[in-house]
Image (tube, rainbow over all chains, first blue to last red; front, side, top):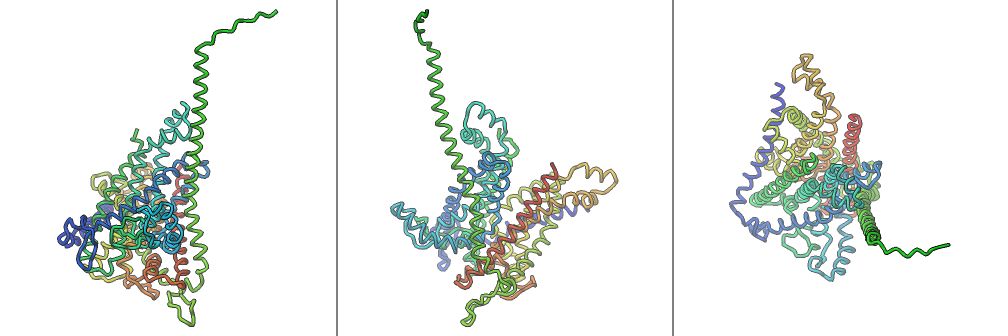
Length: 295
Length: 310
């Protein structure tokens, strides 16, 4: 009876997971039959003419995640170092909860702040400035509107920052004290100790943190779909409108035909595979680092 | 009288030492400078990162607080007319929908999550390990997947129609792994001596779990449920395809409902007009306040538990 109830609950959960995966596979079959590998290689996404090439969407997903990580990795690690080693013990918890609470803010709120506040600012102030400073460099050319790949990347940066900060902080706090004291005793400065001793020791945990954050950046849906603009072409400029897999599913699902829905499910399956793999690897790394098995 | 001692020939050892000391001073100066500079950069990153939340909250409060009128909480959204250009109504339908949908999601996910967590804490066989890994991976999946799944199964296959309950199911799938993880930790923290005391009195495994382990783990379980709820309350993507929309206050979860976060997204899709923008900020502020409140509650509870334990 006792074990029956416990196993029953776990089996219900396992059943949901299997059903989830099966549903995605079965519902995407028509899409694979229709497009096959063309889904990954085609660069035209045109549901009205039944052309489903998701290369622009995949590129947009990777681009926005890369922009987010480009900012979030250095800043997140720097904040983690500060919280563990530089800030007085009394302020440690307030500072890190302040950053961690960014993860609790609903993504639709980030979206609305992006739409109502950041997009106009980007369009009128930031992008023209960026464009002129870089002398119309190809990545920063062609300012049309505030909604853009770069803005989506910046919003994602704020959303993944707490993940990187919190997990790196735990890895950094798990670095053995004697290692740090040994470095200080041979005359290393505080920064040399942090850079040459603490960070290499925490490497596995920090890598795990970045991996988990990238999973979040790849899968984020609502905030991105609100600020990315939703153009279905590969644009060389980061200031142009773009799209991601998750944002496309959210924005075009309701008025899609059955075949298009199946193609979207196929994309969702790709996204699930990617994020599940990235998550699995990241969790392994994080678990290894906090157990202190890195030494 | 003084005899002038002839100057000693310079000892090469002293010369070397002076050289080494000079170069050490120089190196220390350089390294101290680099260290101070880099630590300064880190502190700047800290200030920047922790000011983001302050800035977002400031923005929401300054733009959204004045929308919080009685009408905001008691009326449904209305289209402003020529005679009443400021009559935009409120978001009571979203508030009611959120309460119903989230309450049902909690009611469905708590039993599965807590019992599953108890299993993971009590056994370590291959099945439990697979469930643990799966649930950890599930917490990182994009939440829109759960909406797609519920759409394909409940709406298309079983034809239950767009309804609040479908949204609850999607949120429930999202919450189970979070509750499972948190309750596993809570159950593992219960000292084994308590369990053994129960067994020594002749209690069965089931009644030890019910009368000894669960009461002792309750605060930890509450932490897990609060955390999962704070995540579910703010989610938009799982609800997007499955709950439909309504412009009346709908308490019945078998009918189409609307929830606060999805309402913001719908406002956005319908096009933001100067009349609705204040309601939009007010709605976002309300959502953030509720979510941060739940999240902070969970955080404070877990900090309190850690202090108790040490």
